[in-house]
Image (tube, rainbow, N blue to C red; front, side, top):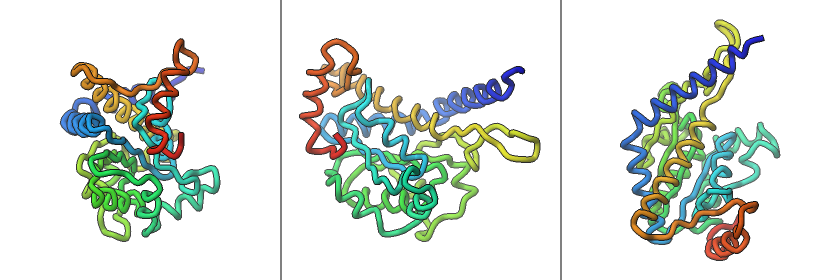
Length: 246
């Protein structure tokens, strides 16, 4: 058996990541500048997503080679392990964003990434509105082709209408790249792969700029590497009061 599906998926992902870097260069650069500015003022980088997009909030949290100033915005009922159907209902419900964000007490000048592949569900859209009202810079990561094909939620707005910076993850409507059978179902999602690439690329670029300017970049070291324990403990002590998930 040849791995034709695997090769097709690899080729499709590579092509779309290449397109992402080429077509989204300006948005990526603006996002780097926003993250750099926040870090330079000892601000925080918050990450939010519902459903499968919550994985991208966890992607940036307390990981080897990760930025210690990152704080995920997490609510277990918005994930999938406590009930996938409930999670879907909640992400389409208005009136939740304010209370969710209150737990983190973000300060003006910090950055919030919102990952929403369709860009239309009520809660991510509302979170963008609430965060901007509090003076946060909002970066929306969206599949713009998908968002164009999807109806807006109750507010009539989409994430791309509100975010200060919009990055198109190059995804397709339905987030499945490879047809399993002609004229039928498709598989092979892009959003998680592209979202992780976008997030880590931006954080890395901002930290590289800090270092070039002779400033400290608060980066975790793998716990299995030499001197990691003391290094990471100092970063946890610095950010513990601002990240309830440490």
